[in-house]
Image (cartoon, rainbow, N blue to C red; front, side, top):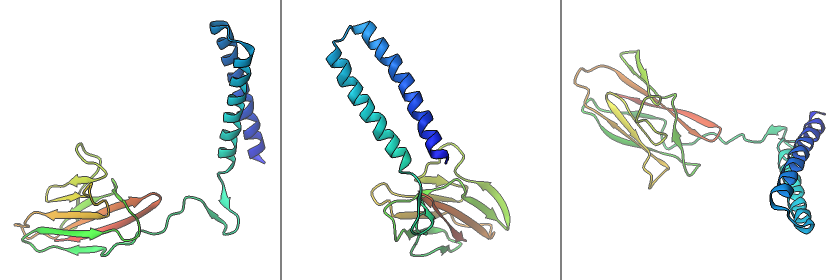
Length: 177
């Protein structure tokens, strides 16, 4: 029941803006009536297309699901175990073409959360750096996550929880060193 009211309000607002625009155009340019008529046709066509676009948002009545639900992210491995010597490992995305790092990524040392990564300067959806690790999604292979860990000279238990996202789907991957 809200949709007809919303559409009526949208149409009313569009008409008010249209009248103002046409008045302004007529005063400034003294256009011929045929041009104004053509502009009216284009304007109403644009308004109708916009309303149809707004009205098309909704739910899938056959399945009862809301549009926008994404399949869960699938990867070749969800956990990486690194040696104390450090090194490099990769995790590959299986069911999408691109993913991004999310600000939900954080690191723990000996069970104590060090900090959240992703909110500091220099972090991007394709790269994040911590005190003992770096994460990269190469621009030439957006299905790959490269994880580099520095040597663990203090022999602390290091954990990294990497939050990745594809649209509305999220997944947490882990690295233990």
